[in-house]
Amino acid sequence: MARPSRNAQTSKSEILTAAIEVIRRSGAPSLTIDAVAEESGFSKGGVLYNFPTKDALITGMVEFLVGQFEADVLEARTKNLQSRSPTLCGMIDVTERWLETKRDVAQAVLATTADRPELSEPFLRVKTGLKNAIAQETDQFGKAMAIWASLEGLHFSVAHCVSILTEDERAEVLKELRHRLEQD
Image (cartoon, rainbow, N blue to C red; front, side):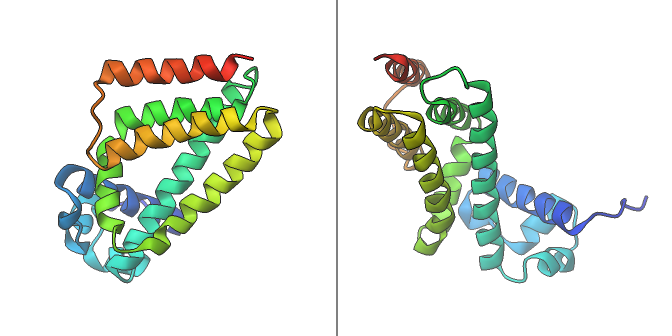
């Protein structure tokens, strides 16, 4: 059966989703063009047409994840408009969800990008925008940044496989961060 035609953006998204699944399931060393082609259902030539090198694929994967994170925070923000800082409240929600569902992706991406510091640029750009939004929403910037730093610590301890918190303990920390955000 012939595959329905795809537009370029859909093809790229499907390939990037497959690349993320390969590293999520099998780890960073398993990320090859052949593995992504097999996972995505595209030919090797189809993958290479969209991402001519493994570096281009990794760069695309990072930008794809950054875009997902930003979209998720903005969506969560709209659900938290009653909060003292809707953006930061959205970040708490997204961090919680990503730590539950994408923790292995963070670990694999970290391993895949460790020798490419320039790949942090998309993350820094989005985080700078979020920080500016939070600064506009609150008159307690220090408090907001302390909450954000806690979120970053949770995320990075999981990504670096050094988290000592159980799932329940992490849930308690996130609950406390939500509580502190809404306190005067």
